[in-house]
Length: 413
Ligand SMILES: *Cc1c(COP(=O)(O)O)cnc(C)c1O
Image (cartoon, rainbow, N blue to C red; front, side, top):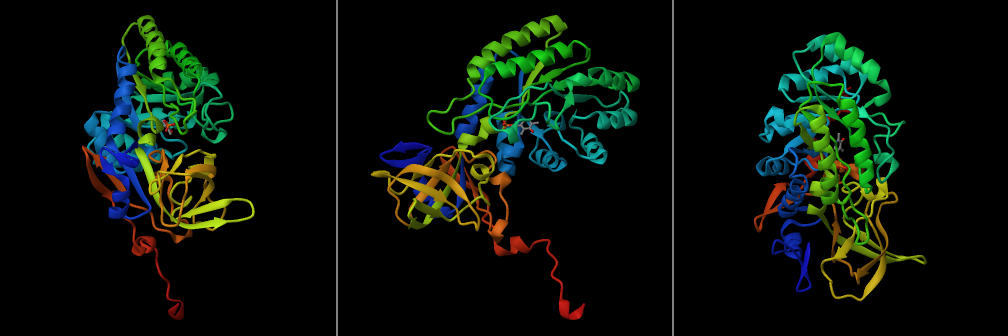
């Protein structure tokens, strides 16, 4: 989002005009930023055979999936429904990796039928997989290297208490099961969490995987998951992806030499690819002064963007209507009937009622985590592509709340 002539724009389109055209609240995504992020990842890892599998739980609108397909990435999916969406968007099954957690074996079988790469994250499922398919269907193994990482306990997945992955301490048990049914392991995977700033954490995890990999002779790829941290506020520390690319490529090349073959290096970023591309535009309904603070109450809430309340996430908020100041201190809150805060004590250009506020970094885990709480409708989604705006999801209507509900007629029961 650029500030040009004191008006905020995306690819030359005025955001205030877009807010008039589509109404508020509305999610707006900038395809150029998605493209920029893909290219920066590719460039950082150009020394190795990199494959990007976009973690589509971050933002899974069908047009966004098609955009990723068009830009040439693969897909990381965590449910059979995401697999189906990916196939509908035109991805080849071989481009999709399916990394579920605690799903039943029927869902795994369904994914095998659909032909996607299966990533198995527990011993019980691996046993069932082996008995069912023997060496006829290859798979990837999700390992848990027991590294504490990530910006928030809720988004850390690689530590000892985590439910994710097969513990590296269970390696012997794992090998027994693999040998017993001659399971063909073509990939090793780890994903230690989100928002990892420290490059050493990636390198430590990678080294553990490389060590273990020597025991798997049929590998085609190593999948290091994700966890890249992006900038949510100006002084945020972020993952230095170019430096990570440089360091990791080198150890990966060394590993490949030792392994005896060149393998593919996979990453599955979600947030890194789409977070900065997205904005949630809201309108200020009420400016309310209390003895403690000045609230700016907007026409959206945790039902549309839950990250601030769920993860204590910081999302920068700017006033699109007034960009001239003076700045004043506001607590920006939503309209949901419980504590529902987008940002505490924010310095924002003076707000009056009906001003349009933009909440930044709303591309990842924004719309996909939205709900109908308080019976509120979900907002539309708009994609800016090559300087034009495209509606990619309509604003919901009251009928959408009642869809699939069955009304009982109690007078006749
Ligand atoms: C959520 C998830 C990702 C993406 O994480 P980000 O922090 O959004 O990049 C990647 N891989 C797996 C298996 C995931 O569950």
